[in-house]
Image (tube, helix red, strand yellow):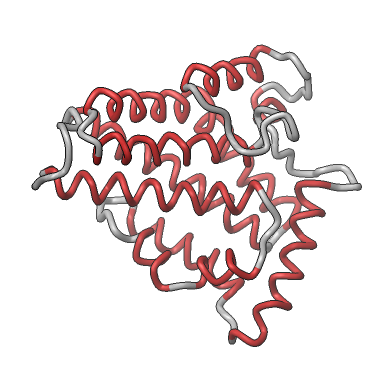
Length: 234
Protein backbone atom coordinates (compact mmCIF):
# COMPACT_ATOMS: atom_id res chain seq x y z
CA UNK A 1 0.00 0.00 0.00
CA UNK A 2 1.64 3.25 -1.11
CA UNK A 3 1.47 6.52 0.84
CA UNK A 4 -1.35 8.02 -1.22
CA UNK A 5 -3.48 4.92 -0.73
CA UNK A 6 -2.80 4.89 3.00
CA UNK A 7 -3.89 8.49 3.30
CA UNK A 8 -7.07 7.66 1.39
CA UNK A 9 -7.81 4.71 3.68
CA UNK A 10 -7.15 6.75 6.82
CA UNK A 11 -9.46 9.51 5.55
CA UNK A 12 -12.10 6.89 4.74
CA UNK A 13 -11.95 5.54 8.29
CA UNK A 14 -12.34 9.06 9.67
CA UNK A 15 -15.44 9.70 7.58
CA UNK A 16 -17.24 6.43 8.26
CA UNK A 17 -16.53 6.38 12.00
CA UNK A 18 -17.63 10.02 12.21
CA UNK A 19 -20.89 9.20 10.47
CA UNK A 20 -21.57 6.21 12.73
CA UNK A 21 -20.74 8.19 15.87
CA UNK A 22 -23.05 11.02 14.84
CA UNK A 23 -25.83 8.52 14.21
CA UNK A 24 -25.70 6.95 17.65
CA UNK A 25 -24.63 9.91 19.79
CA UNK A 26 -27.39 12.37 18.93
CA UNK A 27 -30.89 12.42 17.56
CA UNK A 28 -30.93 13.10 13.80
CA UNK A 29 -31.42 16.44 12.10
CA UNK A 30 -31.90 17.37 8.45
CA UNK A 31 -28.17 17.93 7.86
CA UNK A 32 -27.37 14.40 9.07
CA UNK A 33 -30.14 12.93 6.92
CA UNK A 34 -28.80 14.72 3.85
CA UNK A 35 -25.30 13.35 4.45
CA UNK A 36 -26.56 9.80 4.91
CA UNK A 37 -28.66 10.02 1.75
CA UNK A 38 -25.89 11.68 -0.27
CA UNK A 39 -23.73 10.06 -2.90
CA UNK A 40 -20.52 10.89 -1.03
CA UNK A 41 -21.44 8.65 1.91
CA UNK A 42 -22.16 5.74 -0.45
CA UNK A 43 -18.82 6.27 -2.17
CA UNK A 44 -16.96 6.29 1.13
CA UNK A 45 -18.55 3.05 2.33
CA UNK A 46 -17.56 1.23 -0.86
CA UNK A 47 -14.21 2.95 -1.28
CA UNK A 48 -11.91 0.20 0.00
CA UNK A 49 -12.62 -2.98 -1.93
CA UNK A 50 -12.13 -6.30 -0.19
CA UNK A 51 -14.09 -9.44 0.61
CA UNK A 52 -16.44 -7.54 2.94
CA UNK A 53 -17.32 -4.72 0.57
CA UNK A 54 -20.46 -6.20 -1.00
CA UNK A 55 -22.11 -6.98 2.34
CA UNK A 56 -21.02 -3.63 3.78
CA UNK A 57 -22.47 -1.65 0.88
CA UNK A 58 -25.72 -3.64 1.04
CA UNK A 59 -26.01 -2.94 4.77
CA UNK A 60 -25.42 0.76 4.19
CA UNK A 61 -28.08 0.82 1.47
CA UNK A 62 -30.53 -0.35 4.15
CA UNK A 63 -29.45 2.65 6.25
CA UNK A 64 -29.76 5.19 3.44
CA UNK A 65 -33.14 3.82 2.36
CA UNK A 66 -34.82 5.59 5.27
CA UNK A 67 -33.84 9.01 3.95
CA UNK A 68 -34.03 8.18 0.24
CA UNK A 69 -37.16 10.26 -0.31
CA UNK A 70 -37.76 13.51 -2.19
CA UNK A 71 -36.11 16.44 -0.43
CA UNK A 72 -39.47 18.00 0.34
CA UNK A 73 -40.48 14.89 2.33
CA UNK A 74 -37.22 14.38 4.21
CA UNK A 75 -38.08 16.59 7.19
CA UNK A 76 -41.05 14.35 7.97
CA UNK A 77 -38.86 11.26 7.86
CA UNK A 78 -36.32 12.94 10.14
CA UNK A 79 -39.07 13.63 12.66
CA UNK A 80 -40.09 9.97 12.66
CA UNK A 81 -36.51 8.77 13.07
CA UNK A 82 -36.04 11.29 15.89
CA UNK A 83 -39.00 9.72 17.70
CA UNK A 84 -37.38 6.31 17.23
CA UNK A 85 -34.14 7.64 18.71
CA UNK A 86 -35.96 8.69 21.88
CA UNK A 87 -37.84 5.40 22.11
CA UNK A 88 -34.76 3.24 21.54
CA UNK A 89 -32.01 5.13 23.36
CA UNK A 90 -33.65 7.52 25.84
CA UNK A 91 -36.98 6.22 27.15
CA UNK A 92 -39.10 6.78 29.22
CA UNK A 93 -39.92 3.10 28.72
CA UNK A 94 -37.39 0.34 29.38
CA UNK A 95 -34.75 0.19 26.66
CA UNK A 96 -35.33 -3.26 25.20
CA UNK A 97 -32.04 -3.34 23.26
CA UNK A 98 -29.60 -1.99 25.81
CA UNK A 99 -27.20 0.57 24.29
CA UNK A 100 -24.56 -0.19 26.96
CA UNK A 101 -21.71 -2.64 26.56
CA UNK A 102 -21.90 -4.03 30.09
CA UNK A 103 -25.46 -5.24 29.67
CA UNK A 104 -24.40 -7.34 26.69
CA UNK A 105 -21.15 -8.67 28.14
CA UNK A 106 -22.33 -9.34 31.70
CA UNK A 107 -26.12 -9.10 31.69
CA UNK A 108 -25.90 -6.52 34.47
CA UNK A 109 -26.01 -2.73 34.59
CA UNK A 110 -23.40 -1.77 37.20
CA UNK A 111 -21.96 1.72 37.58
CA UNK A 112 -18.45 0.62 38.56
CA UNK A 113 -18.16 -2.76 36.88
CA UNK A 114 -14.60 -3.47 35.69
CA UNK A 115 -15.75 -3.50 32.06
CA UNK A 116 -17.01 0.09 32.37
CA UNK A 117 -13.81 1.16 34.13
CA UNK A 118 -11.82 -0.47 31.33
CA UNK A 119 -13.69 1.67 28.78
CA UNK A 120 -13.00 4.80 30.80
CA UNK A 121 -9.32 3.90 31.11
CA UNK A 122 -9.08 3.48 27.33
CA UNK A 123 -10.46 6.98 26.85
CA UNK A 124 -8.04 8.47 29.36
CA UNK A 125 -4.98 6.59 28.12
CA UNK A 126 -5.63 7.88 24.60
CA UNK A 127 -5.48 11.42 25.99
CA UNK A 128 -8.96 12.62 25.13
CA UNK A 129 -12.58 11.89 25.94
CA UNK A 130 -15.55 11.42 23.62
CA UNK A 131 -18.31 13.97 23.22
CA UNK A 132 -20.98 13.91 25.96
CA UNK A 133 -18.60 12.32 28.47
CA UNK A 134 -20.25 12.46 31.92
CA UNK A 135 -23.67 13.04 30.32
CA UNK A 136 -24.11 9.37 29.41
CA UNK A 137 -22.48 6.14 30.62
CA UNK A 138 -18.91 5.51 29.48
CA UNK A 139 -19.84 2.27 27.72
CA UNK A 140 -22.76 3.56 25.63
CA UNK A 141 -22.67 2.79 21.90
CA UNK A 142 -22.63 6.51 21.15
CA UNK A 143 -19.55 7.23 23.26
CA UNK A 144 -17.64 4.17 22.13
CA UNK A 145 -18.18 5.00 18.46
CA UNK A 146 -17.31 8.64 19.09
CA UNK A 147 -14.04 7.50 20.65
CA UNK A 148 -13.27 5.42 17.55
CA UNK A 149 -14.04 8.45 15.38
CA UNK A 150 -11.59 10.59 17.37
CA UNK A 151 -8.86 7.97 17.11
CA UNK A 152 -9.44 7.70 13.36
CA UNK A 153 -9.30 11.48 12.93
CA UNK A 154 -6.05 11.75 14.86
CA UNK A 155 -4.47 8.85 12.97
CA UNK A 156 -5.14 10.72 9.73
CA UNK A 157 -3.86 14.00 11.16
CA UNK A 158 -0.68 12.31 12.41
CA UNK A 159 -0.04 10.80 9.01
CA UNK A 160 -0.51 14.15 7.29
CA UNK A 161 1.80 15.82 9.82
CA UNK A 162 4.59 13.25 9.25
CA UNK A 163 4.22 11.79 12.77
CA UNK A 164 4.54 8.10 12.00
CA UNK A 165 4.71 6.89 15.61
CA UNK A 166 1.60 8.84 16.61
CA UNK A 167 -0.24 7.41 13.64
CA UNK A 168 0.75 3.88 14.65
CA UNK A 169 -0.22 4.54 18.26
CA UNK A 170 -3.71 5.70 17.25
CA UNK A 171 -4.19 2.70 14.99
CA UNK A 172 -3.07 0.32 17.73
CA UNK A 173 -5.41 2.02 20.21
CA UNK A 174 -8.22 1.62 17.68
CA UNK A 175 -7.54 -2.08 17.18
CA UNK A 176 -7.23 -2.68 20.92
CA UNK A 177 -10.51 -0.90 21.64
CA UNK A 178 -12.29 -2.81 18.90
CA UNK A 179 -10.98 -6.11 20.21
CA UNK A 180 -11.49 -5.44 23.91
CA UNK A 181 -14.83 -3.66 23.61
CA UNK A 182 -16.90 -3.05 20.48
CA UNK A 183 -16.32 -6.44 18.89
CA UNK A 184 -17.41 -8.13 22.13
CA UNK A 185 -20.93 -6.72 21.93
CA UNK A 186 -21.80 -4.99 18.67
CA UNK A 187 -23.26 -8.16 17.12
CA UNK A 188 -25.38 -8.69 20.23
CA UNK A 189 -26.65 -5.12 20.02
CA UNK A 190 -27.54 -5.51 16.34
CA UNK A 191 -29.43 -8.74 17.05
CA UNK A 192 -31.30 -7.17 19.98
CA UNK A 193 -32.28 -4.19 17.84
CA UNK A 194 -33.68 -6.48 15.18
CA UNK A 195 -35.57 -8.55 17.74
CA UNK A 196 -37.11 -5.69 19.69
CA UNK A 197 -37.46 -2.84 17.18
CA UNK A 198 -37.73 -4.45 13.77
CA UNK A 199 -37.15 -2.37 10.65
CA UNK A 200 -36.04 0.98 12.06
CA UNK A 201 -33.24 3.28 10.98
CA UNK A 202 -31.27 2.37 14.11
CA UNK A 203 -31.65 -1.35 13.51
CA UNK A 204 -30.12 -0.85 10.07
CA UNK A 205 -27.39 1.39 11.50
CA UNK A 206 -26.51 -1.19 14.17
CA UNK A 207 -26.22 -3.96 11.58
CA UNK A 208 -24.04 -1.79 9.36
CA UNK A 209 -21.88 -0.83 12.34
CA UNK A 210 -21.37 -4.47 13.28
CA UNK A 211 -20.11 -5.26 9.78
CA UNK A 212 -17.97 -2.12 9.77
CA UNK A 213 -16.32 -3.02 13.11
CA UNK A 214 -15.25 -6.42 11.81
CA UNK A 215 -14.01 -4.95 8.55
CA UNK A 216 -12.22 -2.07 10.29
CA UNK A 217 -10.32 -4.43 12.56
CA UNK A 218 -8.99 -6.27 9.52
CA UNK A 219 -8.15 -2.98 7.79
CA UNK A 220 -6.28 -1.59 10.80
CA UNK A 221 -4.29 -4.81 11.02
CA UNK A 222 -3.16 -4.27 7.43
CA UNK A 223 -2.22 -0.66 8.16
CA UNK A 224 -0.24 -1.65 11.23
CA UNK A 225 1.58 -4.43 9.42
CA UNK A 226 2.57 -1.88 6.81
CA UNK A 227 4.01 0.32 9.59
CA UNK A 228 2.11 3.48 8.61
CA UNK A 229 5.19 5.23 7.10
CA UNK A 230 5.89 8.90 7.53
CA UNK A 231 3.63 11.32 5.74
CA UNK A 232 1.77 11.45 2.45
CA UNK A 233 3.65 11.26 -0.82
CA UNK A 234 4.88 14.59 -2.10
